[in-house]
Image 1 (spheres, one colour):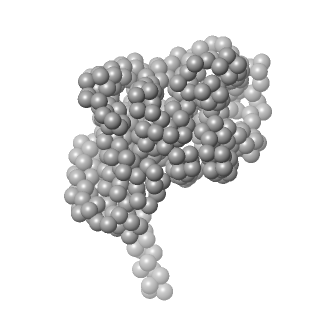
Image 2 (cartoon, rainbow, N blue to C red):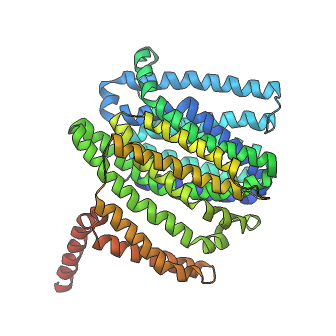
Amino acid sequence: MWMMVPFILNSLLNFVVGLLVAKFLGPAEYGRFALALSIAIVMQTLVFDWLRLAATRFYSEQDRKERPEIRSTLDVAFAALAALALVAALLVWLLRLDLPLSHDLAALAIGAALSNALFDTATALARARFNDKAYGALVIAKNLLAFGLTVGGAFVFRSANVALVGMMISVAGCLIVARGELVDGNASIRMAQRTLAMRFLAYGAPIVVANVLYQSVLLINRGLLSHGNGFTEVGQMSLAFETGIRIVGAIGSAIDVVLFQLAVHTEKTTGAKAARAQIGRNLGAVFAIVAPAVAGAWLILPSFEALFVPENFRGSYSHYFALMTPALFAFGMTNYGVNAAFQLAHKLMPLIIAALVALFADLLAVTLLPGTADATRFAYAQSISSLAGFAALVAMLFLLEPMWPRARDIIGAAAATAMMLLFGAPLRAMEPGSVTLAMQIAAGVVVYGAIAYALDVAALRGVIGPKIMMQLRRTKIEARS
């Protein structure tokens, strides 16, 4: 459970770094930075992500001691792919190809894909072993270095290139800091097995294909937007979407880091039937957290924009964020809820089908929606695409894998979210600022928390109730003494 703390810290600091980088780069240069990152994420997912997924699914502290060939295979496969990525980056830079981005920024995007994959794989290995020390060291070191190098590079040079270099160096630095905890002395190159690598690839490939298709939606939209409206509009829309994704990702990942590993552990120790029941409970918990988080983000949007968003992004930021809130909800439920059900059932083709639906819906929306002078058409397309993919995935879950949450969790969370919106709407009309923001957050937590507790959403009473009674008894004892 303590691993949630560094996970939330990592997401929060990434969020702050993203805002500062946007502030110092400005909309146009941040647009280039965002497009380069989109390319990096697609490449990272396509080339390396199956190793991260394999580490999360097949590696553990017990495997580290008893099956060193698993870690050996992961390490050798990553090293081989990293060498290919470095060669590709060098070729892009030397050939000076005619690309939407400059050749040097395109080469740096490949480097960023490699460095981000290195960090994500390292943290996945730590998570799989429930090694809080290693995970915490990686997160803290990376973000401290990112503040100095990524944000510092953006501030001093106002350059997307320098910001990307800073990002890569910060990853290298954090791996050096945590190297003692990450090194596996039992593993060696000789123990790597081709059959294991093929097993890992077979497991991860459908998930990777689905994720690449989803990420291609974002890359296509940003590429088309940069061609038709320029990098300034790319930057304006990207900041709204990236901060929204980080909010949902911080919350969703913090619970996923525990819930998915719990389901995997349940499958290993108790069996598939118990694991399916756990996934059903997980779905209710994810909905009960993602729904109010997205609704709450919309409620505080005016005050958040006034307090934290760089001045040259304001106005456009709240406009695009509001249009893409459905996409944020669909993203959270897809990635931290429904996908896990199919992963645990070893039925991954539905993930690809849903991603294809999302891609088709996006292309259709971009084609049919009327053109605009800004990025409004693409913001609508983003939400349409995400909702279409999520709807397709839920339909397939209903037909193929009936791992359903308790009705009480869904209905209760929906009712509590609706009441939170009802009580919070008048506060949204107040003068934006820190006082309004604090009032909105407090009111949202109290209203949603009280209703969710009363309806026992996600078995909340069973978790909190005993702690409240224990604290009351302790208070009575202290008062008597």
